[in-house]
Length: 298
Ligand code: GDP
Image 1 (tube, rainbow, N blue to C red):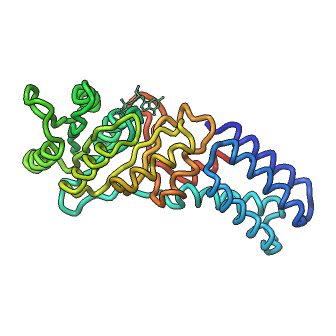
Image 2 (spheres, rainbow, N blue to C red):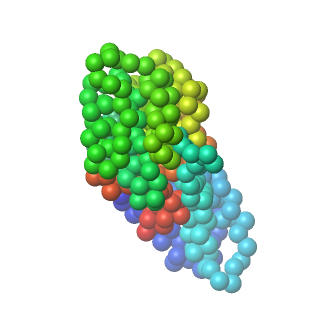
Image 3 (cartoon, rainbow, N blue to C red):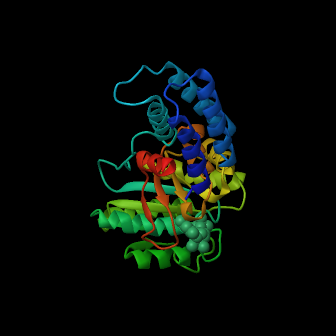
C-alpha cells in the first residue's frame, strides 16, 4: 500500500541523514521532494501546501536536540504532521446513551457501502453488540437482497421492506426499523442508503430526509480510496447535501497512491473512523492515524 509514496518520502528523508547540520537550503530541497511525492500520490493541493509549509516552518525552527540528530528531527516532524493530516487520535464510534444507536451509511454507488454494512455488523458483533442492518437502498435492484446476504454472512438480522409493496419509502423503513430494534433489543442499527453513480440532488435529499427522521449518532461517508483526490469533491458534496460525522475508506487494498486517505480528513474536517482493505467481511478495522503514518514512512 502506498509504496511509491513510502519510497519517495523515505529517500527524501534519507538524503538528510548524511548531513550533520541542516541549512535552510537543505530543508527547502527536502520539502520540495516531499511536495512532489505527495502530489504524485494524488493528495489534494491545499493539503499539500499546508503540509509543506508546516514542515518547513517546524524544521527550520527546530531547537538543537540532544537526543535526535537534525535528520531524525525532520523525520519526527514529518511523522507528526502525517499523523495530523490523517486525523491525530484514533476516533472511536459515538454510541447513544440510550440504545439503539443509529449509524447511517452514505456514499456513491459502488463505494462499498453494502459490503461495509456487513463488515461493520460483524465487527460490532465481535465487540459484544447486537447490531441490526436496515435496507434503505430501495433504488438499486438487488440492493436489499445484497444487504440480506451480507447480513446472513455476518450472522445478524436485516430489516427490509416487505417485498411486493412497490418501491417503498426509505424514511418510513428507517423509522420502522428503529422501532423494531427497540423491540428486539438490538443496541445498534446500521442504515444502508441508496447511492448513485454521480452526486445527485434527489439522492442527497433522500439521505438528508433519512438523517432528519432518525437522527443518527453517526453518519459515515463511505468512499472508495482508489478514486484518489476525487474523494474530496464527492466528500464536499455529501458534506453540504447530507452532512456526515465520519469517513470510512474502502478498497485501500487497491489504492497504490494514498491521495484519498491523506486528503479527506483535512478537507472535510471529519475523521476517518474505519478502513476496508478487501472484499471479505474480515478485511476491515478501526483506522489508526499513527499506524498509517508509520506504514507510510516505512
Ligand atoms: P455499494 O454500491 O456502495 O453498496 O457497494 P458494494 O458494497 O456493492 O461494493 C461494490 C464492489 O466493491 C463490490 O464488488 C465489493 O466486493 C467491492 N468492495 C467493497 N469493499 C471493498 C474493499 O475494501 N476492497 C476491495 N478490493 N473491494 C471491495
